[in-house]
Image 1 (cartoon, helix red, strand yellow):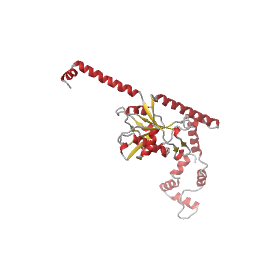
Image 2 (image 1 turned 90 degrees about the vertical axis):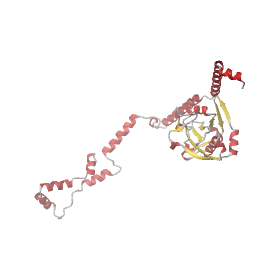
Image 3 (image 1 turned 30 degrees about the vertical axis):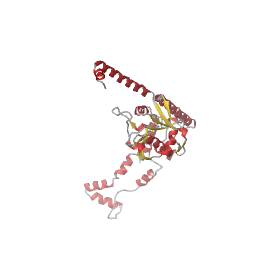
Image 4 (image 1 turned 120 degrees about the vertical axis):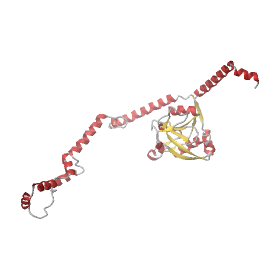
Length: 315
């Protein structure tokens, strides 16, 4: 670089020009970040596991989407759905891959332990392939957890997250599968200008409508819709507490405890007469005993603490 150019950029006018150029570059990068792009993949479905084995997911029921960069991942973290499952390479930098159910009119989400095996395998392959360091390795460790378990604080960098509860995380090994990765890359598509907030609100309305239909169906069948898990009735809770208290004070006829106590009432808990005398002779002997001995013997004939406890409560 010639000396006149260096002298120009060292002057006040050159510094102002350099400042304007830097502001222009920053503005262009900001505008480019506004055009959000999400990559979509078509992954395999399959039969769910455990308690959801009666559900079989098809490819059209699943949405697999990936953030373009760390800045876009911030939107995915902020506006994710409660039922989304988040995939990432453990310990390495990689893309954020999400598993989402498209048809929420049947079920909101599938538990993380009940996901189809084929779907989890494809999600891991996509996540590994979109990792700069992970794609070069033969095997990597994967972590996946529900979106609601992701924790984001203000002091974290863009795209960085941690977990609320590590017990809700699941881990697995992902081996390199070039054939399957090529098949998944053929299904890759992109979408511009995604309104994450509108999609989240639309999903919430669908869930609310589905729950209303379920409560209405229960009410039509004769069930009390207000006794479900979605609504809490304090009056019903008080009635249940009163019934339990009344059952405790009135005894329990089903367990046979009352009949057993009635049979024990006729039995004497006093010790047997060691001399084998009759009742009259024992009474005469007791009258001749000192007062303190008669009081001690009377205390021994008193019922035990357990019996007194039951009698005080009406048993």
